[in-house]
Amino acid sequence: MSAAKDQVFTFGEFTLSPKERLLLCGQQPVPLTPKAFDLLVVLVRRSGHLVTKDDLLREVWPGTFVEEVNLTVHISGLRKALDRGGKGSAMIETVPTHGYRFVAPVNTETAEIILRRPEVLSTQAGRQDLGAQPTENADAYRAYLQGRHEWNQRSKESLRRGIDYFQRAVEMDATFAVAYSGLADCCAAMGYLSHTSPSESFPAARQHATKAIELDARLPEPHASLGFVKFYFEWDWHGAEMEFQRAIAVDPNYAASHEWYSIYLLAAGRASEAFREIQLARQRDPLSLAINSDLGFHYYYTSQYDEAVKQLRFVLEMSKDFAPAHLWLGRTYQEIGRFEDALSEFRWVEANLPEWPVAMAARGFVAGVAGRHDEAKQVLVELDRLATHTYVTPYGVALVHAGLDRHDAAFAWLNKAFDDRSHWLVWLRLDPRWNRLRSDPRFAELMKRMRFPA
Image 1: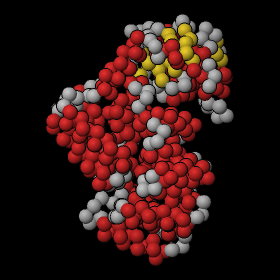
Image 2: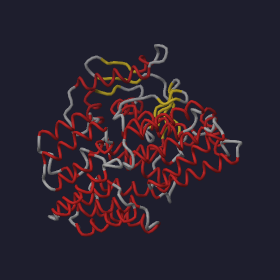
Image 3: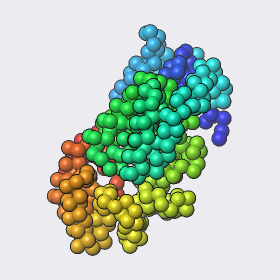
Image 4: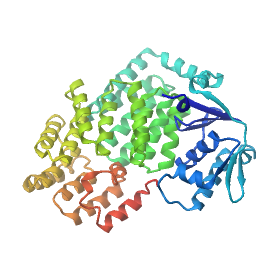
């Protein structure tokens, strides 16, 4: 990687890392919109020099016609973000009718040097102390480690066991912050995998993550968990990004922060940044089944289906029983027309995770698309029966109707998914299974309701 890409800029109380897309004031991340961040990078890299409005529009909005008022609005927001004691707004000088100049003194250093600065070392030292053993209660720590092991398996039963272990840990040590974070992660995973309803799982995850932060704000885990909740349940795009960036700022080596931030960036329409983050996650935990599956997930949502197949098969070579990899492999096969292979993958998941509505709905959709209408209709019957004793995501039911070309029913169930605050809706604009519905004005209305970032 070139030195320019590793440059970190310091000015006043601020540290700007373009590579990490991070602006710190002291040790605290400063929230910026993506375009405001890009503007700041351009201005800082040319500090002391006039940058014309045309140059800024060309660099920050390449290949896009953007009215000048957008530039003015983002510069105003940037000035507010930099304002500390009335001094920040003076960092950016307006050159009337021409453009802007960054006038604050700027020092350029490498990322390696920045990491040696005392304030950063202090944060890192705190994390290292926690990593040694974050509780003096040996039994609580063992329960915590068992909980993390169960969380990594991602099945409904393992997540329930994980919750039990983490609850034992906090019962033995009520100040055990990372155990509360483990509870948050298990609850969030239960919601993400649709094992429980969003209203049951995500608020519980938020409560546990908030408790962990109250006990120790230096932890990256609960900030990442809060970002997960804000993204998937609250649909707070800006708030989610801030939490993911806080987690990364606290500990750049915590793999899950990069993993979940990559998922957020993908849904937000920033695929190249998402790919960089999932690569960073894999560098930090190369053998993680979840992270490697999410790399396949990235290839799937960017229509790189051949790469997705290779990556997901790689995961299954590491662990042939990892259900999420089978699920995403099935979804990839269906997009390249290998319907029998897709059905085979979904049936494997159902055989190993009986009555998982996500896999059932996936099979129902591809059965409908493949012309196996009787099988798709039978899936609807099975999901209706299942809903009498467990949570069934309306998003999945809508998909089966879409596979059968029942558009009115699909939209009715999608509206129920909104009422449920189904987390799957964050994928509404990327999920290729909705392609048959996209030309319908009702689909455009659903997209507006999600308020996707521009």
